[in-house]
Length: 215
Image: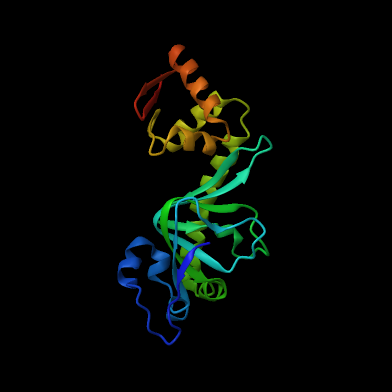
């Protein structure tokens, strides 16, 4: 379970909100009522922030490390639905009665946990509501791309789609391991390696370490 450091509710908050404001416009606009109901949690690698079926208690923001939303495929493999680094996590669960996936730290991570009700109250402020809408619009575009990618039938199609949507032009430099990439593509890492080898052999893809280029 995450280790939590609770902050006092008397208006004294040790978090440096001036530094946090640099990370996100939403954090910068967070009212005092929400700030004093914020705590910091430290989650070790492979530790759970929350599990499927848990009732949402907070809105999370990843300060350091990486947290992933995971769901099991029919084959029993983990499918990565979201990778949060320096950003909000599981935004769609704010008004849900329970989480529909697991949130697991990919490495030692530090998060902010803003009380759910306090965060919802803050969203009623026009200056925050507009920023939240912009943020959700960006997230929706990413989710749509992920959903479109997972609907593709072959590993090759998913690889091409990922490079074209997440890279620049027809090139991409991976910032994750191929095993993690396979989970994000919704395929086994063995299937990924085989597909990459076939594409390289066919002259469709140039692989130079972590750099990939479609031909």
